[in-house]
Image (tube, one colour):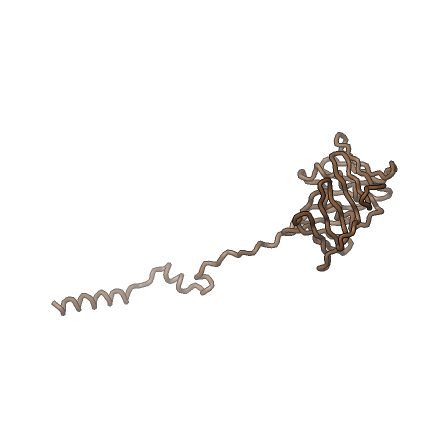
Length: 220
């Protein structure tokens, strides 16, 4: 009896040793080690950049504004500014790794300030008008007056017209003296688009105009 059992065990072991691997097992065994294991999904967010605006001035590209992950990116005159997302009641802007400005939000608008917190421009916004002044009292402001029925806006200071913006067929055109700015407007920007007349205020530095534009168009 013992000899019979031993013989059965021996035959089973012999069959197991001679079993041919299946095609699937052969393919898996021959695959490189880096293919045999399931690749883990990356936990990092992919870098994504989307062009939001291309602003033309007198027919040539003046500036572009892009969305890059959690920042708005302004490119103009070989310069780049990254505007971070809002955190609490502030938003920071940086260039070359240095904070160059901050936006401080208020109930009626916002303030554009230096990195040290000094006022550059105070902006008050309502449905028909935007006031931009370089003082806390809003004295002698630039005013962007909106006419929604005509899809136009005029920039005035002391009742003197400085610039005009017209929105037609999702295209915004801003004229000021001998300058013309133009760019396409996405549907979600239409409500604020005429605020871009700020570009026509030449006495405001280009950098500040573009930072004001990002805020007025609510670009993040």
